[in-house]
Amino acid sequence: MAPSPPSSSDVKKLANKAVSMADDLSNRALTSLGIPLHQQPQPTWRTLMAGATAGLMVDTALYPVDTIKSRLQSKQGFSKAGGFAKLYRGLPPVLAGSVPNAAAFFITYETVKTKLHGYKSLGPTGNAHVVSHMIAASLGEIVSCIVRVPYEVVKMRSQTSQAKVVSNLGIMRDIMAREGLIGLYRGFSSTVIRDLPFSALQYPIWEQLKARHYKRYRRQATASESAYYGSIAGGIAAFITTPLDVAKSRIMLAERNDALASGKVLAAIRAIRNEKGIRGLFAGVVPRVIWISVGAAIFLGSYEKAIKVLTR
Image 1 (cartoon, helix red, strand yellow):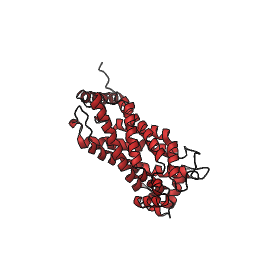
Image 2: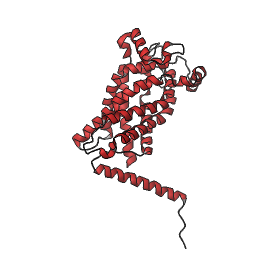
Image 3: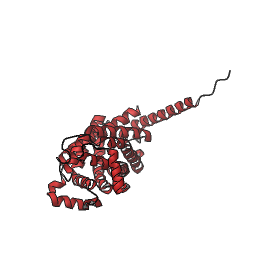
Image 4: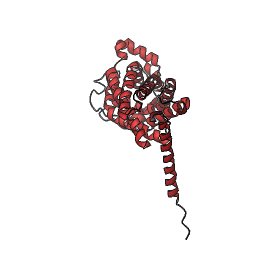
């Protein structure tokens, strides 16, 4: 009796197993050549899953600190913006945007990074290609901002609203009715202007620290060590870019007839400086640095851990 042909599900399982084995063999071969895992090209599905996991973890854990920062930077002041009440207000739209946002960033970042310097040129010393990382991170942020900004606009309006009951859907409908789609992208340019230099600082520093670790200890950094290096890189970048963050917050929270609604970053910086001086440009710098340092540790540490788990 002739054996029955394999079913479509059996073929699919075999194909998936073959792809997994090919990925594993590729990773092992590159590792044996002295190329650490974090510098090896990752399959898109793995990058997507790891990025999504990292985004969900960091946004859920640190949302209250982000709320405090937004209220400190609001025009009406911390107390009138809500103080310490309802620190998780506005969380749902953020979580809804976490997965596509983080996934979009890391897919772009890893793809561009690999294309720019190519893994074949990497030696056992794990040299960090600073310019490649800066360009990859910058392009990743632009793609990420397209996904993230509408959620962030709704989030910030919700965080600083004085209403007792706030509906995120209601806020979105109100913005669309009064300002159209462009209202959901209020502050897009200021967000890009803020996040490009931030990422251009954070990711090269992070990659450089991991490369130095590999060169010194002859092994790749663990997830916890990557998290530590991420916190250092994030803290430095956060402090330097705080004035841009304050300007972006004021633009996003501006009413339609407010001069800052134009979205001009330099105009916003001048207005804040005239109102509150240099200190005003660094409003919320302490919670911002703490939030981003801890957030970078969670975000980048989770990403590295997820990559390693998914590689097994």
